[in-house]
Image: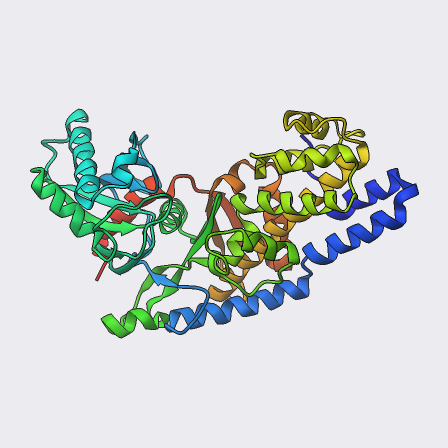
Length: 468
């Protein structure tokens, strides 16, 4: 597929091919452009607001950004050794063995995938953690790790926690369909330790409790010493960056003012200082967490496809599309990848869009329908990339206002990795915003922060003693 054209290009194409509808189409697209394009001045204003929210979060004041201290210092790149990882991020639970070598090299990890059944999801804390311990014990035996001495383990726990050290954190609430009793308000590391003791697992030491965003940054930093930002752009979105500990007032209040640096988990999906449209408000009203995670609902793969469906539905109801698009409401599984494929179809008749609509059982669409659908997808897709780019640039400028040093951004997630054209759009928006100093910023794909990244965090803790 060709590189996607600009939103303005798509609009001009539609108007050119349908001069009889110029006035109507130009009015519609003026609305789209005004709603979804973000000017450079607006980007700079967003960055200013981002910095304010970051400062307030670091100070423990009311902010849309939690700015959670991770208790992880940045990896140096020379951490070595064999580490285990327990990755509990949903119903797919993984055990991983990772061998970190010198100079950022990583041996191919051993990975075992397990599914947590429905009974455990609605069961008790003992049932969950005993299951995890049993799986871990079997993995150790299967991979001949019984006689390897004390094993250092990183625990990836991708649920909301109140973290008080690198090896302790209390569950705030369950998400993702979990409703296990007896865990909320408890220290999940202690619950796992208790279960392992009960099961006779004596050679495991949990050295880190981490989420996937911090792991993504740690993984990137392990390979590239200039990496100081980690970003998730997938079903959800989040970011982490490296901050001076002296500026983390919430940490200093509990542990005293010390030097050094620490990775901060921003939880930026909740950032709410963004220009929203009526369509954004309609989407928000359909969600379980209405009024929260505003940025995530404008950027992440989970929501931009739903937002597109809402806009198209509105245009269908106003008879902007032909009657053949009335089947749009019946579409169940429209994704960000579908959007990117529609955008990248630059054929004269948009045959790929027509084929995709047929697969959705929306048949006999006109060229006008397909061009309009493409332009709507493009407007939502581009805005997602522009918002993400604005915040990434904002985080970098918070660390280095004059861009005096190189910065590498480690990014993971399906939207960045798999959605055709998104990676290019994100980079283009960042570089346009930064201007002449664009060469100071590099974007890299950093896969599996919840696995390999968690092992790097464990190695950092074991080597440097993080987690006070």
